[in-house]
Amino acid sequence: MRKSDVINHFKKRVNIAEALGISSGSISQWGDVIPEKQALRLEHLTNGKLKYDSSLYTKAA
Image 1 (cartoon, rainbow, N blue to C red):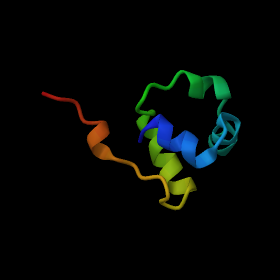
Image 2: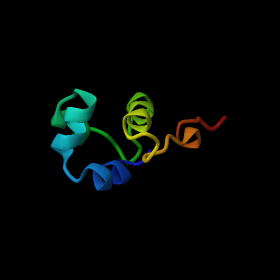
Image 3: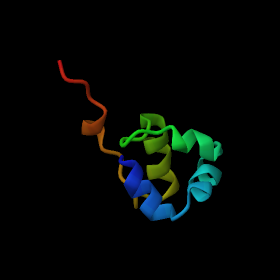
Image 4: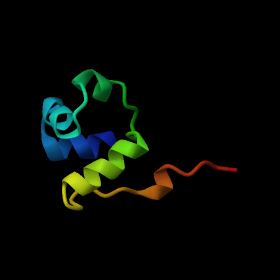
């Protein structure tokens, strides 16, 4: 899941932080692809409006 998609969905970082129960500073540390655990939680919290994409989390051999 890409950080830009999450921000577009929630509009504000504080809204993302509240939904996940983390600090907005944690969100600032995310790269372009958000942590896998948070992606899975966001897919659940948004009833699938945001989609977890496993291909973003697979490591190349």
